[in-house]
Amino acid sequence: MTDKSDLPPFPSNPHLAELNPDKLYHIGYSTDDDLKQLFGDVKFVCMGGSTTRMANFAALVQKSLADVPGVRDAQSPCPPENISRSDRYVMYKIGPVLSVNHGMGFSSVSILLHEIIKLLYYAGCDDPVIIRIGTSGGIGIAPGTVVVTKQPFNAEIQPHHNVIVAGKVAQRESYMDEKTRKDIIACGQRLDDVSVVAGNTMSTDDFYEGQGRLDGAVCKTDLATKMAFLEQAKDKGVVNIEMECVVMGALCHASRVRCACVCVTLLNRLNGDQVNMTKEQHDRYQAHPQQVVIAYMRSVLTGEANGDEPSAKKSRL
Image 1 (tube, rainbow, N blue to C red):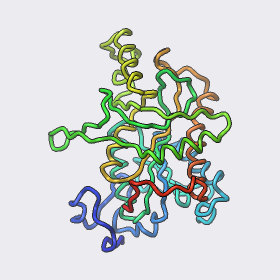
Image 2 (cartoon, one colour):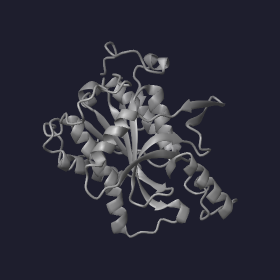
Image 3 (cartoon, rainbow, N blue to C red):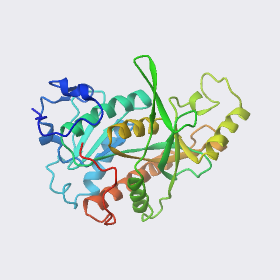
Image 4 (tube, rainbow, N blue to C red):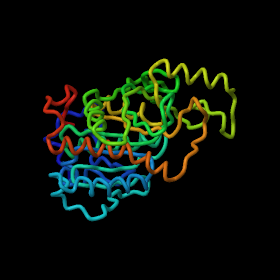
């Protein structure tokens, strides 16, 4: 059972102190488990939409960081096994790295993040960072470019996330940790054949109409309106569009957890709406943000990051 007596004050929800146990329903754990023993060494939570992608990423972490302390010393099965106790999400632990899938869209990523943030808190993890690794549509940049998000925007191109709480709209600032972003970019720029840029990211709650596409089953807009929308986003520094970043930034910021979003672009939306590429191209592009994040984790775990003081937003959950 998790001992709450030596944990710091809850970062944002005083009601959690009343729960005994607190059941993390969608991943199958609770404070009846010894979460400190199971997860107390976690430093990175890497998240992506697909179950298969995150299983493959877990195996790649195990292989790529096999020589790194923490990963090297972990008693991880080979290949890593899914330790989620629910069929909603998968979860793999490779030493200090958790690899989990978050599904698609606002609701799915929000549910997982609430429970993962609580898991990290109950486990007493020291300054963990949550990193989304995914795909996106670019605006004015070449397919295959890896974007590390500076500022998340919502579908109205505003820098916050609106969530309905008890029938009322709550507006929450969405934030990505600046130092983490800079460190990730520095690591990515040392890799061959990978283009890494910083830019703003727009998140929508839909892939088709929400992103101004003209190729959905229903369409109530036209080409001119779509192009004006994309150009407006571009004028605000938006270089890619996806469906989770603004929620992630809002929840992590409210919970005082560092986070970053690292997504590769699969197309330039100014040139069309359809993703047209071979499976080989897709697999190659999809690997780029994974390589960047693995390089970043290596730099942190080996102390090679840059020798700077920890981020001003550092906190022990």
